[in-house]
Structure formats: C-alpha cells, structure tokens
Image (cartoon, rainbow, N blue to C red; front, side, top):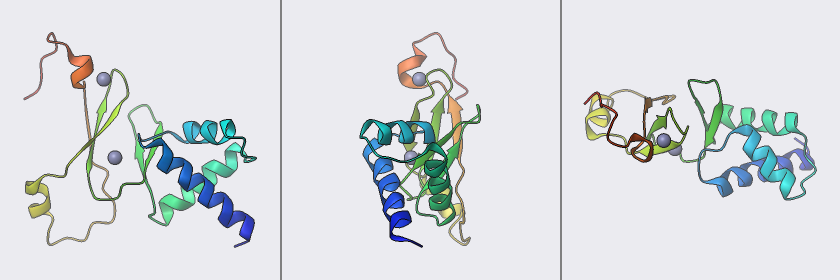
Length: 128
Ligand SMILES: [Zn+2]
Ligand SMILES: [Zn+2]
C-alpha cells in the first residue's frame, strides 16, 4: 500500500473518532470536506469499507438502509430511535455475555428499534 493510501486511511479513521456519535459515511465525508481535505466521496466510502473488513471499525445498518459507523468495538448494543434516528449505545447485558461465552463472536449486529426517551413523551406505549 502506498504512503498516500495509508495517509488517507488515517485521515478517515480520525474523522470517525472526532464524530463520536455514529456518523454516516456522508457525515464523515462532509466533515473532511469542511476541514479542507482533498479526498473524494468514493475514496471515503471505499476506505470505510476496508476498515470494516479489517474489523477496525463496525458498520450499523439501520432500517432505512443508512450505514452508520462506530469505532468502539467492545460488543455494545445499539438502540435506534425511529423518530429522530439517534443511535444510543447500550452496554451488553450480563445475560447475553453469559449466553455467548462458549461462542466466538465474529460480528455483533444487535439493533433495538424504538422511540428514545427524548422523543417518547408520555403518550407512547412501550412493549415492556
Ligand atoms: Zn428520538
Ligand atoms: Zn456504538
């Protein structure tokens, strides 16, 4: 891999770290543009794909087919608000950790959909 490629990869990865809030590929690209980085949209998308394949970051595919990215790889669970599209990190439960302790986990795609506390108000009925 050329030095230029390595450099671009680093730039994209750092842009993801800066966002801290599960950005989409477009948001990462726009953030880089704003900083004046000379990098194309397809390059950003390609690098994000590579980073996912190398398991350096993970991808969260939401119900409306938007990919968000996360650099925290500790097996946490994601809650997605169907109203504001916010993604909230939840700690993995002791129950799940126990249930899976004999297995080797390759990918964790656990997504819980609902309405977040901010959007909920008191009208909505919860499943639980
Ligand atoms: Zn919400
Ligand atoms: Zn997360």
